[in-house]
Image (cartoon, rainbow, N blue to C red; front, side, top):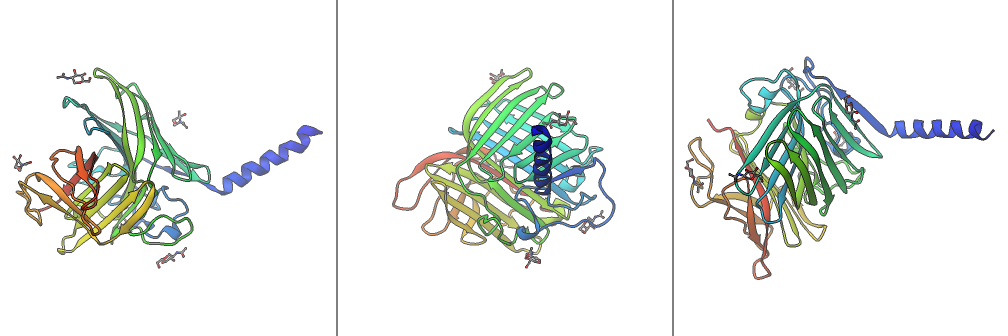
Amino acid sequence: MKSFFYFPLILQLLLFVGAFAVTKIIPTDPGIGATTAQFYSGDSPFFDGPKLDFVNGTSFDWWYFDAVSSDGSYQLTITFYTTVATTLGFATGFGTTNFVTFTAMYPNGTEYQQFGFAGPVVISDGLFGIEGNWTGTGFIFSGTADLSYYRIDIDSPALGIEGCMEFNSVAPAHYPANPYIPGENVSMHLSPVIGWANAIPDSIATIDFKLSGVGVLQFTGSGYHDKNWGIEPLPQAVKSWYWGHGHLGPYSIVWFDTLNYDGTEKVNGYLACDGKIIGVSASGLTARPTGANSTYPPTSTTGNPGGFHIVAWEPALPVGGYTRWVGQITGGFVGQKKYKGSSVWEWIRFVL
Ligand SMILES: *[C@@H]1O[C@H](CO)[C@@H](O)[C@H](O)[C@H]1NC(C)=O
Ligand SMILES: *[C@@H]1O[C@H](CO)[C@@H](O)[C@H](O)[C@H]1NC(C)=O
Ligand SMILES: *[C@@H]1O[C@H](CO)[C@@H](O)[C@H](O)[C@H]1NC(C)=O
Ligand SMILES: *[C@@H]1O[C@H](CO)[C@@H](O)[C@H](O)[C@H]1NC(C)=O
Ligand SMILES: *[C@@H]1O[C@H](CO)[C@@H](O)[C@H](O)[C@H]1NC(C)=O
């Protein structure tokens, strides 16, 4: 009697769960013809899910994660891609649209970098969170539906990587020019052909890996996760972009400054303090290189800048003094307490 009664209940529950979760399988070959990308949050059922109808030969959809130790001396970047590699500007394809990259940097300058080529990608997203399995690589990421917790688990004897990275968010998610408010329909356009959704602008990160031949990679610090997608090859879609994020004192900051081929500049910025958003904007913030090599707009012969000066909402929040991918930053509102923190920055450019 009892089991007869309970069984349909469990079935009903499974059906209920099924209705609020979507599982997508992304094959290793690009699809033929025009695909459709979601650029409005109202048309995209879940914040961090795949944003392309299918991956074709000139579109991309990726999930990016990084962590930097509190003193800026360790860095780890892990990215899950679904795209033909040439779409990102690689000289040749990889024979699969599905691949992962892992790049770790030790304080003594030792770098550990691996590429993993995957079979079909299985991503499920729904009321119980997201899980992405890049099958064949041993790389899996997962996160809760409220975007408060993410983790990456890696079990890859082939790439010599075993362990996990965990993020406990300290800054609310956002779109390019709006905070994330479930149910709201806002633009996810970073440019007419590129989308951006920043699930974890800042978090407390715990990293614990064993890397073959190098040893352990263990640190705590600040973790970041976002995703980008687009419907044109990256070198065509944007001429140059400065992107970065930092954590200092109670502040979390993210900036994205893109320069388009028509000479227009689009700037997106985000500033949170103690877990509350102070500003999300498509204006009010500019990223400019400083020191050596600070030609702006950059040309093909411009080297790496000596630093960046980020101006966020008056009064200014100055940041600078680092030339690598990762470093220490100092900042604060003018006339108020200054903080030291860690940051990661990136300069991508396709300047002819
Ligand atoms: C991929 O889809 C985009 C967006 O619909 C389209 O503009 C592009 O031409 C497609 N690429 C290929 C190779 O079909
Ligand atoms: C969201 O807004 C866009 C742009 O205004 C519109 O095209 C789309 O239909 C809207 N989606 C929903 C679900 O309201
Ligand atoms: C990921 O996919 C692989 C290959 O299909 C499978 O063996 C593994 O169990 C999956 N992992 C999870 C956590 O679902
Ligand atoms: C740098 O650190 C790594 C990790 O601890 C270690 O394996 C490597 O031998 C070190 N390299 C040098 C040149 O000390
Ligand atoms: C400026 O660029 C040149 C050429 O790429 C490079 O050698 C130099 O190290 C750069 N300066 C700084 C401060 O990074």
